[in-house]
Image 1 (cartoon, rainbow, N blue to C red):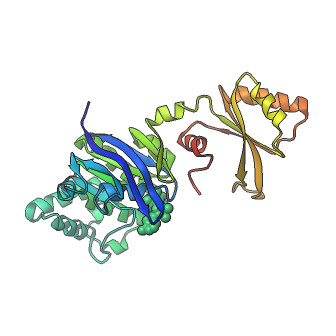
Image 2: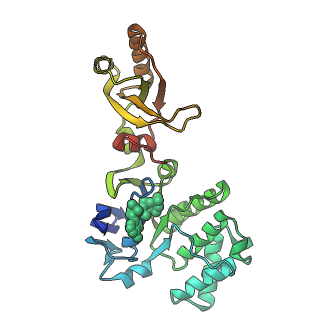
Image 3: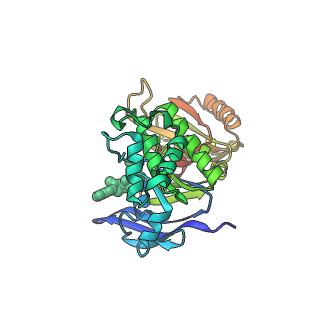
Length: 327
Ligand SMILES: Nc1ncnc2c1ncn2[C@@H]1O[C@H](COP(=O)(O)OP(=O)(O)OP(=O)(O)O)[C@@H](O)[C@H]1O
Ligand SMILES: [Mg+2]
């Protein structure tokens, strides 16, 4: 087995009494693309900040490349690349000048730095525009320059904090391809945070689902999704009727049925009020739906809404937390 490039053990970060990160442990194998998937405020950036030595954990320890992130932060900084959530670039400097500037901060210089700068600009497909001032770039292009900056010291592991938020589809594809190439061609390990489940699903070898400072599930995307089995059906009803729930649960293709109280969704035409929703875990969504509809027909039940949740990481999150990934 490949050694671990990251080992986080029981990380805690408190702000006052509140824990932004609350006992987080995980490992990233050398050469792995590891995703942290979670909604706003889940603790993704805070976790990255501790792993990259921006501030120490309140409790717990972490090693990156075998170095303790607090006691050996200098050694850690040498082998990591960080692409922060907030852009950190000088708008009046050109793309290339920004990359060179940050390279100098790593103690690089001369021909080696210039060659490396050209290489990373090529990696993010920004060679042709690299001479233009950053202020003239689109949001997505700025992100790509930010990524180039993160790569300047040829890191063993790259921390990418929500690199695709507010990015146009073209830049998003470039970012995706860069990440995949870096991993494949250079064996670079990646920690990638996102609240887009499609990204985590497509890119990551393993995903830690994080919510309210805790990792609530951690596995390959496939296994996380398989955990849901045959999919979930959600049925909006006028009231929570216990006999009805029992009757649904008795259907052969139904594994579990529970009432949820959820805020009205943002669907067009929805009044936004509180709804009663029967959440049904099934062996097979379509079969279960047929059985349930037949039952409702017999019992003359009014159905307000009905949806089949395709098994994906979004549904996994909903299943684990009872809420949606996006707000
Ligand atoms: N400097 C701070 N002082 C107090 N609370 C903070 C501070 N920084 C972060 N927090 C809180 O810690 C929690 C985790 O924040 P964090 O930025 O790590 O979340 P995140 O998962 O990166 O979210 P997002 O997707 O919005 O970037 C949030 O509740 C946030 O309000
Ligand atoms: Mg964040």
